[in-house]
Image 1 (cartoon, rainbow, N blue to C red):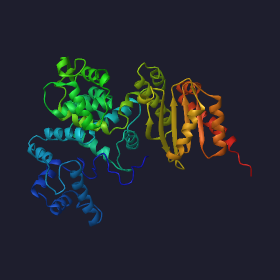
Image 2: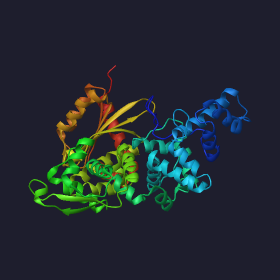
Image 3: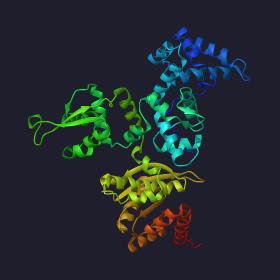
Image 4: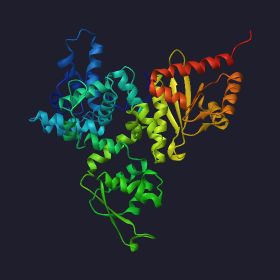
Length: 461
């Protein structure tokens, strides 16, 4: 299990003791209104109601009551001074319709507390054919940039609240119809949004932030998006890279303007559709922005064989994603922990990608992986990775190529391993083909490379 960095704030709300199996939501927010801002009285009442009979010390009982209060804060029901928030008051106004109250609370969790990220991750795990548990969730969420503390039950608490509204049923099963009804977005649309590029997301958020259904000159939105989000657009390819995909997804309508509206060719006039609901799109895109590899998700759910097929895609960006997915798949077979991507196909024409993984089994080790979608891996490719080890503090270099390992590259790797403590693993196209046929053979491939390294590093004592 991966440790959240020391001192890093959890991306999922704290919910210990703030659970629908432990407390009644309406009773709590009624109490919070009654003791508006009086922390001590609020905690005292919670303790008497739920924890007075617990066989533990008075100090621990107070901590349990305090945890309920902290959970209310984390879930956005109380502010720092102990007053009900707008959400808390809204839920209180629904006291005569508890099902509607839980539905409104679930919408808040989904859109504002990374609830959609949790649901999406659960669906990904299930699509991959695996069962859901807290450790797996922690690992999969971590790979998406979503953290919660080691040993924390944050996802379980969130699931219980969403279950009250019918989003989850029978454990981790997701009712996708109910999810759309409550959040306002379907899993299909969420999938499409998660695959949008940084430029597409920035453009869509800018258009949504304007908050009006009026039409705009496409270049004006581009300039505003660039200024607000620091994204650099390719002006000549704006229609192909941004506008057409957004139109195809149903978020905008495009019409041709006149030359008087802009310089050079006629600009596009962009009109948002009803699908571009600000109160949904902005929080959803903000959640997706926090994901470190949202555009990889679809590929990571595919088999190695399907990923290899994508390496031949005509689109260089998609080839780059497939190459990164290949690195992920290979390292996940070895149960490695993802750290960062340094280079991907959009900047290399889909030719190579550099990814960093770590392991804490027995001893800490850091592995840097270069995947190349090319005819061969050269001495220069290996030398570049060797040069980066000092900066990355890596112990292992893995070079993966869909082609062959060059003779000079192998000679250089052997020389480096003889003269240093580095290990260099070289995988060629034939190795990948064998691993695709039988993933367990990755162990044989790495054992082969390990034995080669051991021979080179034989001590003469």
